[in-house]
Amino acid sequence: MSLKRAIPAALLCALALGACARDSAGLGAAPTGGSLLAGSLASALPGRKAKAGAPQDVATIAANALAANSGPVLLAQFEGAPTPMVMAERGRNGAMRTFISPDNRALILRDGMMAGTRGLGRDLMSSETAESAALIGARKAGTAKRVQYYLDGDGLERPLPMTCTIAPGAPMQQQGVTVTPVSETCAPAGAENSYMVGADGRILASRQWIGPRMGYLNITQLRD
Image (cartoon, rainbow, N blue to C red; front, side):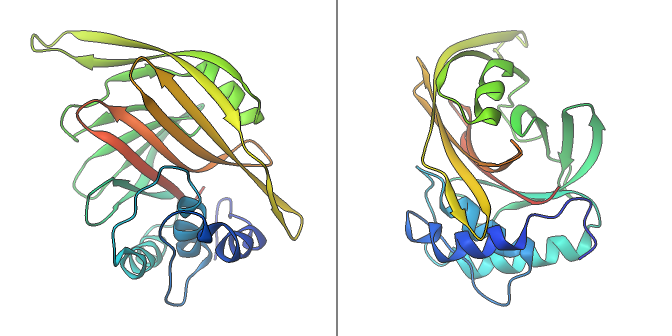
């Protein structure tokens, strides 16, 4: 594949053989590197809830997404939704990246962490995640402050401040490639985010709490 930045094939194989046994869906059907990633990395995320019968569908969607988009592309799926959204990068400003679906729903990521949403209903307007991002990218334990902003009934932005505990898990290593699961537990919202972080600090897959009404979104980076 001609990728701007490919996920290492060895990592995909290692997680397909090992991490998939932990807690969710896998994939099947002649996977490409990106479509295999959708099942292997994401399935290792703690707390992720898979739908029965989903693996084959996700594999096909991932393969088609990679074929249809030459640039960065991800899959995003709300827990309980029947299929993931395919989202391609349409803008980048430093660490801020905007991914848009064919029906114009948008995710805004900052260093792989949710910075905002548009077109999803009950949107996350913006967020302050720098402290969490620094610990997660470094795979270090610690405490961080974060704030998420939502519109109230009067159309005014209201903050939801949280204090989060970051805890890295044991690295998974196969064929010289290492990925570390990192959890982020935030109070008082009770949010339990989880991330799969590469050795270079990139978030390759995640389960992130968008808000009290939208719940969790599972994100898998197919091509970076």
